[in-house]
Image 1 (cartoon, rainbow, N blue to C red):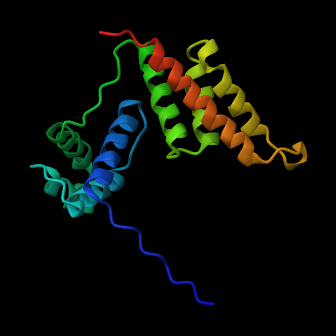
Image 2 (tube, helix red, strand yellow):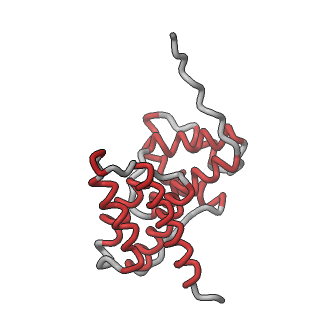
Length: 179
């Protein structure tokens, strides 16, 4: 039977703004995002009805103009109030990154194996393997080494990682100083 390509569902304004916010954090935490993705995010947002003075310029960049995309993307973030600045203190920035990754694991927008691996290798190591990250690092080890012979389905390990992320966030929220 012939399988026709499925059409990507149209993005609404909330989805487009969430995508911009996500990409802002990715970039703030040092992840490189190609100009093509920045331009596509601009186009998605424009089609979804997001309004910003620089958005059409970002969305309309040609291949030869791709080097302008990061600066225009940042301008759009400022205009939309979505610019994210991680804490200046390197340790606090790592904790902010852990919070962000755990949120994505918990809400299902990031694969648990990928997210826990990032926490293990990019955060826990730099922080000296703090107790608060032990459960997530344990999940990363289990997911990285999982084999069918274990008799535990990988879905169960994924559920454990999601639960560990939720518990981590709950504890972090409870520890935040009240103003």
